[in-house]
Length: 495
Image 1: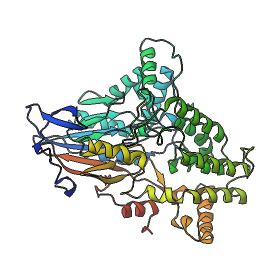
Image 2: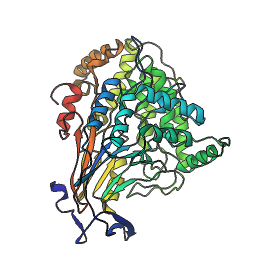
Image 3: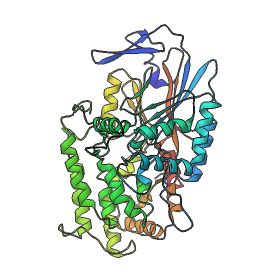
Image 4: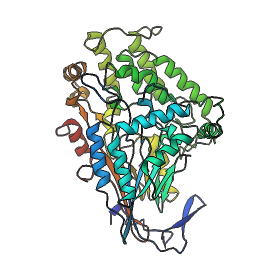
């Protein structure tokens, strides 16, 4: 058994058996046996597949960040999951952002029209057929259990017509779809997408329930759904840049950290998105528990910075973006010239240097930012032994007391910039950036674009105690480490 769980087989001296009823009491969860025979469980968790977007055609860059080669790898991974047997069950949990409506044309931060949303879903399925075939086979032929969860790029999956199409696509079997803000739980394991702790990508589920209620009765959606600032950032800023700079969404910023880079590349709309975010935060954010990061607002299912609202870090990112975009004049918001221009390179250099620490820590497996670590600690204190999120695209494994926090990572492509961009020597950093930008300007993304698909595996014994909980690479099942992630992203040894 993993050392992290050696002391966690019991709570209050009582062995826990499956299945459980959960009852809250004095800040913890009590696991109570119901007398039904238990068996071992294998939980495979993947997230952030981001299936969708037009595929590349010839010299025309597409909008897929999960390209055909990765789709084939995903289908192979699903196909080799162990079938349930008399000793152990197998469940695959896809913990949100299964598909990517934001990458489907016509671009919209939220597609409320049911016919349009259904058309986008069918287009996604058509362009990612191997994955859906593998899921159908997993359910029908392998006999596995499948749990689908809602993220923030696939909110439309919860709409009645699209939800029906989704369930029809995976076929009959042990399939369930969690779309109304519940977490998935199995014994001592808690799994959720994680976006509810992210102020830029919070889903107001109360409003979403209203939309579904109206659509189920063929009523007009009034008032409109309050779309997310992160979705507005993707649609209004990132998608426009992607036509010229197809690397932009591989950097995976969907919060204020994206603004300086977007401004350096000449994006319009940065100020509008920032204003929208501020209004969104003020409208939906109330007080948030300082210790847990959990929201107290029953309508918004997300947490922002301490006390809610716009954080000082977000404000600093926007201020930098405005200065970069305006060339030092805050009343301007445009920036002319292409990526090869000296001024554009200087702006990009400034933006990247500002984000150096954030970028380097992002791929450190044992490091997680407080936005997600705080609620994970709170869940551990409540009695959960394994807490799993997705959303960030960054695979993690962090001890939280006697429990462990995992992030399942992503199947979307990632990009890592050369180490020397972050050198203490400005001359070395500029030289590295120059070479990097040359590749970007020429569209030579193969030098920097990487597929890094990962999955979390949690194994529970017949007492339903966790005997294994870790994150692995999907191609060879190797356990992740910071060094191995850097090596895969950089194509060489980490520095």
